[in-house]
Length: 310
Picture (cartoon, rainbow, N blue to C red):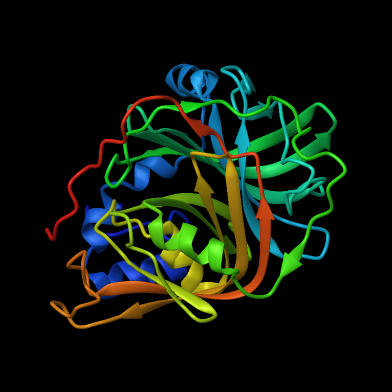
């Protein structure tokens, strides 16, 4: 049997274990390893998913580039049809880099409720993608803590992938000034990462407005304390491919970025170490797409959780 502070090799991959080890949280991560057991989406997970109007999906386009994109629709757009099968009754919009995303690939999906600060990660395989939506065969499903989720109320986006029909996907290799302003003002973004064997993953990052810095062809943000499993950072330790999407919740506009990212360790107490963790992530931009399809604010104020060093 494994001791309480030992992690079975099949639960966390070597990248996750390496980051946990350097951060000194192997024992804390081990206590959460039961969350990664094979999922049963029925019950509480099905109820949570059925009420959601926003998710983010990580996948690759026809050229093999990694992207993360918003999926929006009315309650019921995320439908559990079996213990390990999720039907998504929408798809990325026509001007989205993941429009017509190819099936048969690993995907990561994050369902989030900003109003209650709850989120559920769902990882698996995209088995079908058609005009009616997407079907996922799920390998993992687990919740994350509510830290750094800005409490806001959002109006659902379109229930079908019709937003921007006919508009081509326009790629760039650097940020325009308005895109940089949106990113500098953001308090929220979604992060997509990948692992050659475990597949793709979608996660959320939040902080005070301005926590993401823009520097020429790169961005960086401090890594705040979390659940200590380091799924995203562990993936980056093995495969540097990464994707980001920033949303303007006032307009439904989205800025998609595809590129590479690296975890940087800095001395505790340095100016970069806002989370008190000694970690930050630097992202290098390869491709930029202006998109839409993000949900919009309902007429309620944004309530920000505290952001302080632990």
